[in-house]
Length: 289
Image 1 (cartoon, rainbow, N blue to C red):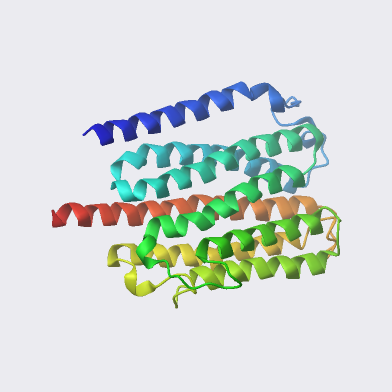
Image 2 (cartoon, rainbow, N blue to C red; image 1 turned 60 degrees about the vertical axis):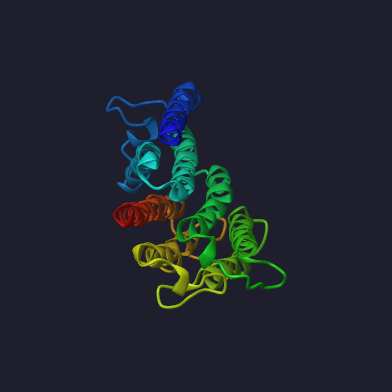
């Protein structure tokens, strides 16, 4: 009983902290509006619809991530104690993303620029957290002792995430050849897939036979996000103006649309399927008592 009250209090405090933090940053991204309520550069008659879509998706991403944060924290107390860490990680991922989307929206509204820096500041924090969510959901019993280059499951996933994000930024910031950066970043993605497995197989660091039946669907759904859902990111990367692999006048906006859609699907979806598995496992535990 005391634990339940503590969990609910913690959830409410985190939600309140998030709300206050967002309120305190309102002036950090003030936008210049036109007569129609849109940012001034969208009201000058030159927009072909893509710029409006880009701004709209920044705004939707900000709102959706914030709403998901509140939902995951509210649900944290409704799952068994062993799955509350998973819910906390889910909330952190979308909460951190909401902050960055707020600022990316502000940069785009004020200057008409797609911020690469804020994007990668978000990813360098949230992608490793997404890798952490897998073991927190399936349980430490399902994580094997197998090692690669001296690294266990967590080490492989973290290093893979850093490689993927690091080379992605190097390519988009013009620090190295875009194609080389894409290929090297893909190696980090492959490392995560090797560690976590695919919807059709166990991973180097995961033993499917030790994942409970209630959690198996969610575990495979997380793998689908990693194997298929993350494909959207390199597709968007191809349109980056600095990478210059596909030259288009609105390449930055096309890239931003792809990234925003991918983030909304993967970050919120990642949390939803983990929540579904945690709820199902919690119900099974309650039925067995």
